[in-house]
Image 1 (cartoon, rainbow, N blue to C red):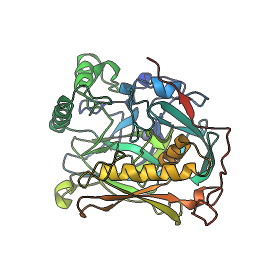
Image 2: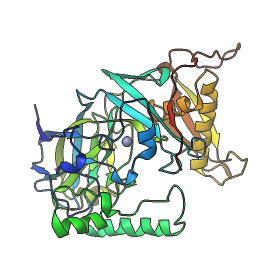
Image 3: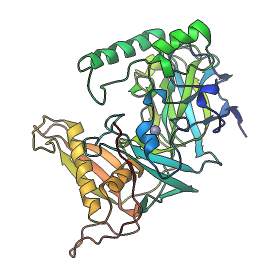
Image 4: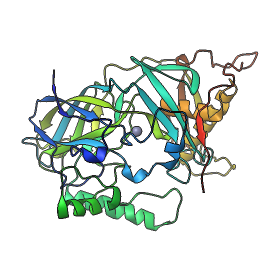
Length: 410
Ligand code: ZN
């Protein structure tokens, strides 16, 4: 069995674990070192460090300080790896902690984070998902069961000082175009809640002030939230610092394309079993600017879908020019409306789109003025037939459980 190089105690604050960090900065010391070819295991917190609880209230989703995320395990240094190399990472396996066989999905309040459909779901909501081996079900979203496509939402290598500066300059520049926007356009560095691993003293204060937030995906990978980057995948990461500095966290038991609910997929604490290798000079050899990966040979085989189309005309009937974001939103809203015909609340339907192995496709981007996006719902995850029938839909989901709602507080 591979050695567990980073251990996480879910009963302990993530801030007390020095092999965990929540910012990207080149000065964060390696939590451990390995050699090319080594296999090892890293344990991880869920992305909030345990803030969201398995209970019957969404107050935690409403009240969370989002500047604390994401708690990542690492960085792992790899001997002999240098800037310009490609770090080859095999995700040999990913799983939930034995003592934590559950995960959460939520929608953030529009006042605190929002989400893809925040104007339609402006209040904090939460559902809890229980794991049964490879399957998951939710007491808050009845009538569905699906196999997990388990993956890390967030994985990547440390930036060098120049890349870090580029990130901060371009994101702060974007914020300045509309500084009062709710939710904000981006998240600038924020020292007060930074956790910079084993750094201490002045070096820690500097890294906390400069460290990039972990929210967006960037050139190094980071928070890409790609459901298909799952256990069994091989990922090729660009390397910017000596040793690469690989960190991972934000594990998802399952997720729909887009992670549209933002809080998020089915979020869980867990572990990642990895092997690392190197391709020397691989960034230039292959023209790599962002990571590339090979998907897993093991994926749930859902092969029958009901596919919802959306075009770039918004909810108010306004025409947008080839806007894929607007088109995907319409596809999602169309799917939600449809699922309510079977008795689901709109929130339950939204939760299904965020958690189940739902596919999103950019289907057309040239037929002016409308782009076309499609949302693919696997029909086999439901306890009943969701296809249109001559005699109309039957309300299979009746009363009782619902996605938990916590009203805004002023
Ligand atoms: Zn996540």
